[in-house]
Length: 131
Image (cartoon, rainbow, N blue to C red; front, side, top):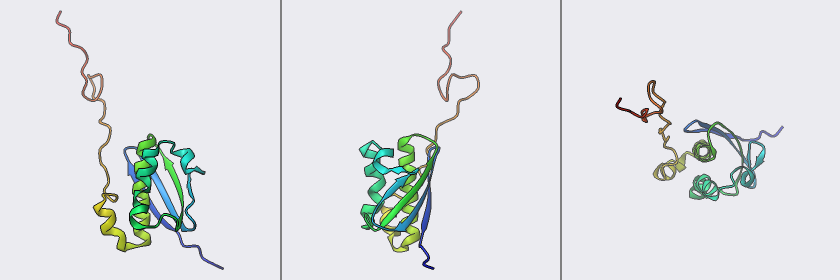
């Protein structure tokens, strides 16, 4: 029996979580069982996702399967990028300096600020009226 090699990585961005699995192949990308271009119609998202593959010259060497949940399209793209970077790192630890320099392994910790009680939003107050 031939054992298939799989490399996994998890990425998070805002409220999005991406679980990425790399298997040796010819470069197919499947996101939530849909096509890559179909799932990410915005070209800027697609370009940002492909950065780790371009930096490490692994563009057509792996098939990528991704399960993304939560958040919006750009947040999901950021989570995908980080998960992909971590999966590449699991595959080849020598790529760490390249990915780290391009800040692909850094978790962006910016989150939506919570709404405070007695206010209209996170920082917005109710309109003050002198009576």
